Image 1 (cartoon, rainbow, N blue to C red):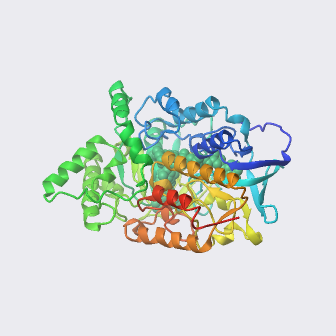
Image 2 (image 1 turned 45 degrees about the vertical axis):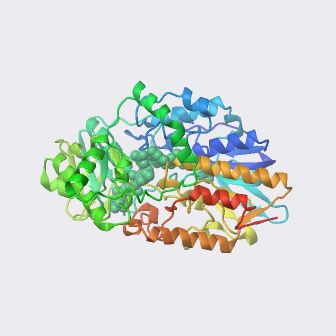
Image 3 (image 1 turned 45 degrees about the horizontal axis):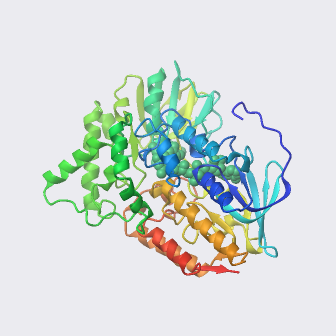
Length: 538
Ligand code: FAD
Ligand code: N01
């Protein structure tokens, strides 16, 4: 509950269902809907007290999507798509959360979900081909199919800084923001982290607070959102192109890939004109400027130089602009940020930028932050320090597969999954947008729908043919993992110390986790059509 109390309920002891779904974000909600529609009995579990996942937890000021809302919404119900009216090009968190709530109510999904319930463990019983799922409320549920909709960005992470818990006033993490909101009026606020969450929240915190000190370790590329109200004209254009768009989404090519035909023109003038055009348009579409932006360092350098020049134009103090100019990774190899007034915020008299590359933080103290040269006292400290991405939520659960092997051990050298959907040694378990699938490099809602539809087809076919066990084959998984890495190695992505690589977590193996190749949907469909090639079915 938002007030911290917990709803009393009896544990679901010894319940038996066909399927358990863990997580009630966009992945879990659609999975629950499809399972019920196909006549499977199902139990959902969600740690929060409401649906929405990302949009339930990330309530920091300025939180909004970076894919236009008309596209960042479910496609599986035409009526839903037509009825729901987004108010802005990029909706803010409250509106996206309201949308998730609307979906849950409209399709009556809540009765299937046990809220405020965290799944602690899942153990596979090899004799029965069933999972036993245990929660922090004492539930013990047995299921044939276990579906992890636990999210790629759902395990917030505090910075690894000495004294991190010693700050005596209040500390906030953007990924676990208080439901009642925070009023920073009159306060001295420190913000650590300048990824998407920091870049979205800093301008709004700066409007409220007496003073804001931004601690930046790595400068990030950000492009202006050019957000605004959605007009009737926008809607008309959207619906006019909808069928073509859906043909693309549902087409075999789903996945990243890039468009090789989109080569940079020969003259610098023509290229600059295109950068200007996309900059004026706003949004992450800037990365689509050339098909080889993420494979050619030379091409990438030019686009990066363009953005750095824009930063220098927007930020009045050249020394501050230089600190904000990203120079240590190619543009796009860390998630590009989409902002509203971020760089201009550093022109405000109440905002200060601390360059941690020059003066690192030595410790967090009861009074604030101490760097190698100064102490900064604060009334509030904000950690915009990101997530244990893609694997954090799965590794937090004690998952034991064949022979009692723990997932944490199976993934000790980095995540391994076949198509990002299933894991060798963990039969009957599926991961929605798992590592090795396009996931965070795609419109996540489209990827969620593709995975849910693949899983439901698989479960339907298992039921029809009277089979009770499906498991990724180790050799097929090895080949897929090698392919995911080989495709990534042909791009510039591995050059950045990004969370895509696991580089934001000390000690996490450096493996490029999302799949960046083309044709992912076709590959998944071919696997299913060939009788689940690469799986062992019993
Ligand atoms: P989540 O929404 O993360 O839901 C997972 C749920 O599982 C959570 O509610 C969590 O509480 C629950 N859970 C986890 N472990 C357990 C457990 N052990 N027991 C019980 N419950 C558990 N993607 C885009 O494509 N476009 C965007 O514009 C975009 N914007 C984003 C903005 C922010 C601030 C963030 C953080 C992410 C954004 N993303 C965006 C990515 C976003 O995570 C996905 O788009 C999508 O919402 C993920 O849905 P999901 O259901 O897979 O996971
Ligand atoms: O997290 P991040 P995020 N000392 O990991 C810094 C999605 N999202 O929450 O780069 C000092 O990107 C860290 O510095 P460095 C989106 O996919 C989308 O912002 O490691 N600094 C970095 O600056 C996004 O990519 C939206 O050197 C420390 C920051 O903290 C993903 O979620 C909005 C530190 C973390 O950045 C994660 O974004 C929000 C330390 N010890 C999120 N530790 C949209 O706009 C970490 N940092 C749609």
